[in-house]
Length: 300
Image (cartoon, helix red, strand yellow):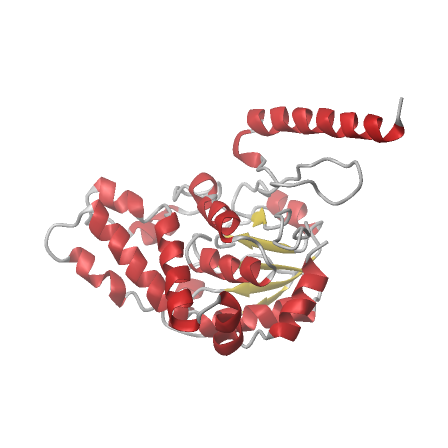
């Protein structure tokens, strides 16, 4: 048989096999939309890192970029807060070669739920002290809260993130440009501030916006808002404190993401800066040379 034909058939078989595995494995696997660039290797890779005490811990690798490359697997991770890592979790993440964690949370969040990844071999944890400004959400608690009002409030909140999260995002890009092993960044739920940071990183790497929106909405699969194993009841009480007075359907909006939030951010960037590249340069200090270096480091 022709060698090229045999290899193509092998790829097709692998694709079908891994598609079946992904379907049967539920949320543990997510499709890497294009083949991993390693000859005739599998076209899927684990996106979610399944942990007992941490939600939404996943790899952002595998996505095709506009220039036909792919974001490298095993280099950049995102997650929810890390205060309930179990011993088994620590064993699992020890093999990921994560050298640096950037904690996007505010001072009060870090004090309430400190990261438990410590000891010999633990990553360096970097943070920036700030107070989380939620004034954009204040109107939601006036009058009768509605689902549409909650979504509008999140759109407004994301607009403020372009300013309030700018220093944290700029520092995160500095971490990535240093290329000191794999990196992990996170906020509390790993969906809003972390989702926006991921959008900026994938944009810099040349990933199409629709793919970025796809990755962003994976938080609806990987974050439930319910206590992970080993978390104290007080943890969930703190997480739900701001939504306890809201109707259940409105409170549920806080546990999810909506592509409309991120689309609004991109629209604002396009309107104010003309392009994501100009925004990255002028607001985050990530210039054309930095983008070239990021692509060299994190795409294949």
